[in-house]
Amino acid sequence: MLSNFLIKIIVIFLPTQLGLHFWPSFSRVAGIKVDYLSPTLYLVDILLIILLLLNINRLKIFLKKHLLTIIVFLSFVSINTFFSVSPLNSLFWWLRLMLYFLTFIIFRLRNLRWEQIQYPLFYSTVLIVLLEILQLTHQSSIGGALYYLGERSFSTSTPGIGRLNSLGLEILRPISTFSHANSLSGYLLIVFYLFSKKTTPAWQKLIPFVGVLLTFSKTAIFALAIIVFKIRPEITIVVSLFLTLSQVLMQNTHFITQSISDRLFFFGYLKKIINHNIFTGVGLGSFIPSLGTQLPGSFLTPSKLQPIHNLLYLIFSELGLLGTILILLSILKKKVISVLVKPGVLGLIALLIFTGVFDHYSWTLPQNKLIFLLALSIML
Image (cartoon, rainbow, N blue to C red; front, side, top):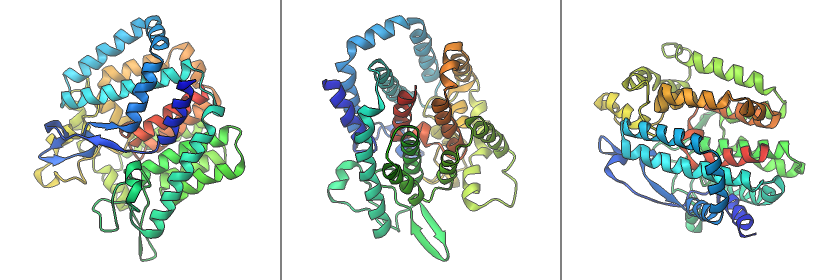
């Protein structure tokens, strides 16, 4: 009973990012603080840990049944961390990922149902979309008590804030309680997918739909069309893989926009980063420290110290051949394949891969990872 109530609370606070940030030496590259590398204890993390403790007996039974898998996983985690460009950074990333994996297991052990989370998810979505509208109207953060939901202070003059240039006007893209408009769009996209696949009133579906549009994220808007027009997941995945392979060849083309050019910048250093340790990877969460060793001094700026904007290349660079092989072996099991080919699950994975062609938030940001795992647990 208490666990069910706590899960509802977790879902309500899922899109928030209130947390305590720490800035050890490994969170800096060339003396520059990098948000992605800052160990952070979020309010949601505390709620997840409490949920784990409440379900510790169920979890022990499950882990004992899958002891060999756990040993293989922890062995790889140890190897990946030991050979990481930034071992302490990778250790923190692995601890957070393990917390999320254990949470996902608990969702499955408790047979989490759509009816349990529908309204908490809807109410939290209404809140973040309303805040998004207010930020768009004011062209700045709202402030006040919203700070405690994790709203960051920003205005049109804030460096690095997302902007849309149209018809001679510069419009600040709202981020609600997220760190970037694209991360917000990816979160709302999965919420809309859930609402579309489950029994939900049309007016409720409209909330995340409008929220995605107001982020002005081209990728997310294309993904909306994929959902609305019911494009087959297999087609979406094939197209996404083709685009991923094409990106390597697009670096020297002249017809691309500035937005695409900024994303392709990282591909010039990708080969060197992968070659640094192609077998075990540069370490989970350590793409940026590795990038920092490759960039010329003039490029060591906050705008350049980012993960590569492609999900599959980012995963491969951080986990290496060994990690990639382990993932593929896990996926190719008959039992796993029978689950992955379910239309709802395959569609969700297709969205992940498609948005991952142009961004990294589903791998690097807590809110996006958690909403994906929540949606996956509902779709299974």
